[in-house]
Image (tube, rainbow, N blue to C red; front, top):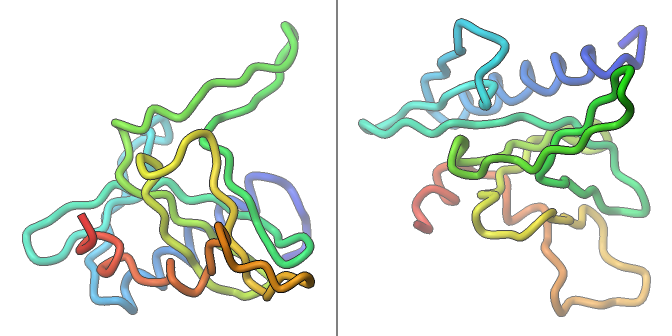
Length: 143
């Protein structure tokens, strides 16, 4: 990727999510507007899943997704919580692993942190192993 503009990262995340979902056997649908709360819809077996896609670089073996939108304008910085009723799943693309991970935001409070490498102190309690979040079908089947 030549630039690191936020929009370019988002576009790459959506492209990677599209490819990953097709590889998992889903038909992928795209909204006809940029103003939808979701970036794409996965369809299989008569079921539609609305997905919002996030690009997150790993730091110290983890990545975190906050369920909110942040933007700036002349009036300053604005923060708006994600409307969890408007999406079913957040797909997180991590460039360090070149993989997508799927979480249901309704299962978490304000954020979720997934670990892609073992912690240096060996902690396992309360740690969410990113490898467990690779399949949308498995996530969807758990509810």
